[in-house]
Image (cartoon, rainbow, N blue to C red; front, side):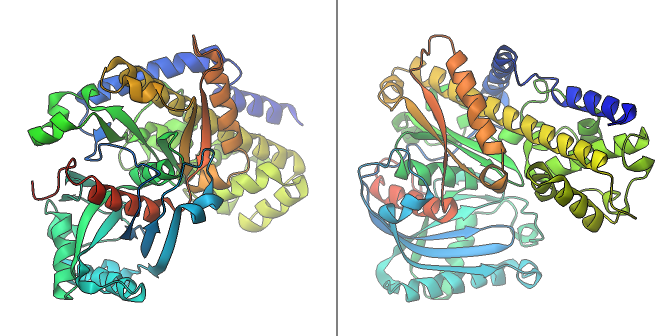
Length: 494
């Protein structure tokens, strides 16, 4: 490898490893700094550490049948799901789902632009028609007043366990402009009423809450969830006492008096600005974003951005004359033209496969030199490594926050201490599920940090576990919980 290439690669790897992955002390110190950010957000932020209306995790012994729906950026899914009581599958994985629930019917529809452009009334009629189709296919009586749990993958200002005010949706949906700040539940149920479908919406959750609920039903040792795909987020169970009165403003007194814990949407993507070092490529990426400084940890770790960080680093190498003979190939001149899937292929494939990928996919005039591919591969691996390390720090810090706050509250201390010492972290998302190294490396760093924790002495372990079918199953679990725990959970009419 030439001097220019070697120098560029060393400086790039050094910048990416500014928080040295090999120093557990440095990683633990970063966790302590992040913990202070978490605590401040619990007290003061209106954008992060948002308490939901879910006050408990599910019991594996509960049972019931619910209709569940899950609206995402391009797909609408509906299922009729029967939950089965069980003893708790410690160490549960996706393949165990058949023992936990029976899917009576599952349907899925693409949501194209023709649907996304509908007026609000027609859009919710479209939803009601597909829910009705599923109810009938499952053989459920339309007049039986069945419950619906909704997983809604867009911002919503929740006002009860089953309702919330519509916010901007994105992903091409235009309906929100008509119905912003109105009650989402009312639009679902109005659509059902127009079809004569007696179905009431009794649960509204987001994707992180769905992941936590679905896996906690499978494995009662679960109390934290992680989503690491295109974006980043996490949910966590915390004592209600951790929150200031202003964060709980507007909630009925009977709710706050009865609740001991609450499930929290952390908005994890927004943390870490003062904790995690940034390279010049990270700063360039942030400066070109729609909202600079808005989601620092997501930009450093998630699938949407990892490939772009690599591309910007390649561009620096080209500018220095250390890569591609000083000429950026046409296919890499476009923002986000190099994605996380390309990274995975380059990280694990042969040099020959890397040469072929770059030449054919990125319009090189001739096959790139193997020495260049070695540099590209090393950068991809370092960017993925950094993502895994930062995610491990964030998850470990969420556990520290949960442990400290629950033990300090007499109403929740026994709950925390009675749980298994092996704590399950439910995960989903393409990066953590499919990338060849991220999950394994993240688990290694979690093991190092928990072993470093003062006074732990091998007592606790944090274990990443895949949460299968989390959107639909989480919505069904929330719906059944709200039926079973109706006397304790505030219903939307309160």
